Length: 626
Ligand code: SF4
Image (tube, rainbow, N blue to C red; front, side, top):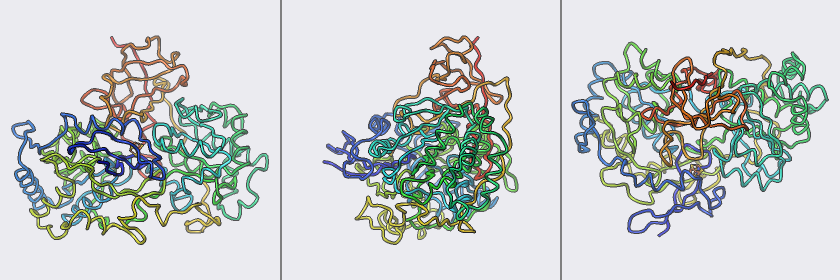
């Protein structure tokens, strides 16, 4: 029997999945040929998912900490315990003492809205603010354009040039590759790293890590110097003179020297923008820096002044507004907020009242947030930590109570995508194992114990229907978001206060580099993992990939110590002569328990806008293991 669902992972593609089910067990997963974007194939991670779905490590009963150990208990004991402790803490210290932390372990809107509604009505409690992942870039585009959104994915077919700026579509958005190939556009990769996406491109500009702002200014200086700026730009851009002055504070040569690229590269990129239509696909990594929003703003400005906004085939695409067509059930109330990238230090520091309890939905903050050891310490020192997950993650290991939930093959939810404009409905292709409940089911049973039964009542289908905005129907899913534009900003109208693009015109603070840490740590996604969820076990110890000249004599395959001012990791060194000599590449999503988590090296710091995580501004060095 074939059953269809939508992938709920934190990935731009939100693929249609076709599962072959025999005797109540999934035996095969394929991409849905009928899904307009998926086109019949899945990524390696989801192709391998059945080994995870049926792994012996899957949690199938609640775990309650007794005498220091997590032990299986019944659901009624687990939920009675949760209700009693949450009610007691709320009564003694007020709802602000309870922190509900939710992240992107599933992108399901029902899980998001149901958990937010529960904790809003129970409190409102403390919730997170900022966004570890896309916060800086979204905030930058909202400031520049009034909104962070994209033209239709298939509008790339109208592009003459496509710039993959810090974007590895092969790993992070594999279904975009099909569109790139169909578009016949000339692609250029702009990225400090060499990766598979270089093979899709006719050139690779391998700039210095973090020097994207300098390169953007060099390109802008060329545009102004050669009179390649759109002649109508002044009619739809504010601060055009200020942007020109910023670009011309230095010569093209000086900007290119800072970015460690040739002047010819900057001229070539400027020419491609001038020829247009050109779309810049903006990767999320380059915004995860102390001045990450300024980088995205500089790239936005290039697209604007070169006339590539509001035209078919043009754009500065960072995000697709995946939630826009759905309704919100929670009002967004909170007792106070904890900045997501500063989870560890802020939870440890919080007073009046201190955070006494943390409820974690769809997240593994110990592995995914910077300064993992501080996050772990923050959780280990709380009175009550409740984690809803399918596996015993680094975070769940520190919980007092772990509540087993459904996987992506059992999810019943609604999904938008942040890599295209199609919406979909996740439907269970198999029932969860006995002893596993959905997030909604868990919250509904807890609600009955804390006086919120009516608030949380209703079938899953009824909840989904409550979330549907105008023009949406469950029966029509997957469907294109009826509110999404084919061509964003058509007519050059921007939802900013002035109706015009707000061009960046102030320089960001210059980064400070400590020469005793000569390598830029870049912990990046891999085809094998979806953050800390690995298709196969992560390597132990983790690897670090460096140029042979940056290995300080440490042989390929040898163990070494990778250290930052914050921490250190034992790593296996891999040489790659296609990489720059100033980068150290570690796979994202390694586990703390395996000593493979790159976030032990990364300080908890935030970006210049949007309270994103400045994850890629950490300098490291290698030394031999003695
Ligand atoms: S992880 Fe991404 S690419 Fe892979 S199946 Fe899910 S949505 Fe598709």
